[in-house]
Image (cartoon, rainbow, N blue to C red; front, side):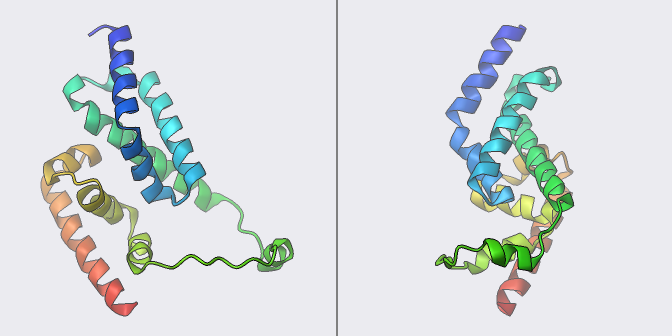
Length: 162
């Protein structure tokens, strides 16, 4: 496949599935602006590293892996950022209170380590089969099964505590 056709194939695929990739990124980064940034950065990475896509049949799993890795990279960068003191935050507070409900499942999912959260999101929110998840995460199928079982167990414990 020539370079121009591959660019077009990637572009068409991303445009057709943009909502899925936004939703996936949002599950990781938890806000709209960062999710949009992740999708944008993932598209740039995909187009600049298209030579790593050895078989166009694996475009779906290849791009999912890029989105997941870009999301995790952003989360790592955010962990390194400086945390603001509570006094500074209260001085900037406009006095409005959030009226959003805390959803127990979201809290429980957020508490999971990334490798377990990834498997849960891909399996139950993105509806991937275990084999596809193994390809996306570049892990052995048995590793994916073990992580899924462990993640469900951890979620059950967390939800029982809430």
